Amino acid sequence: MVDEIIKNAFERAGESLVFPDVLPTLRKLSEMGYPMGIIGNVLFWPSTYTRILLERAGVIGFFGEIVYSDEAGFSKPDRQIFLYFAEKTNTDPSSLVYVGDNVVEDIGGVLSAGGFGVLISRRASLSRLIIPDLRVALVRDLRELIEVVGVLERYRGE
Image 1: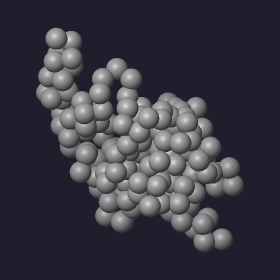
Image 2 (image 1 turned 90 degrees about the horizontal axis):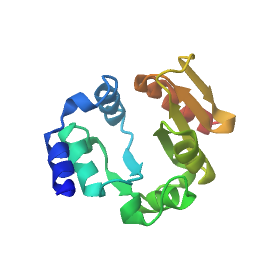
Image 3 (image 1 turned 180 degrees about the vertical axis):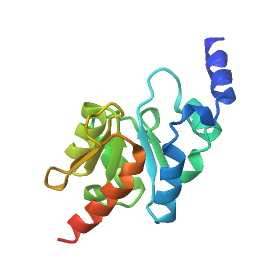
């Protein structure tokens, strides 16, 4: 019965679940030709419910590959889930740019796999901080990610 209640709640969710900067940023990154995916931990419900939530929020169409811990057999921050994602997308792990809100699970995980971590902290005092040599960035608003990926493109070219 609890399972059915959770599923019904997810099915009724909508775009109001996402911050105002999310859809414009996803659209812009998509227009710029950046492939996007999701790596996520699921703890309290199956990943099928999270997929319903993303669909109802109007964002699932932006993402090509979606990997959840209950399907992969690994959880963030284990580097294996990032390597698994890279393998599934035929991407060099060093090319991964992972955006997350948890320093250990998200940023630590992608760094351990050789990728680049972008911490989104909506309460940060800085607007954005990009440190390419450390393979990290901090943004307060997801729209700042556009500049971050631009810096990374230039950095990779050096």
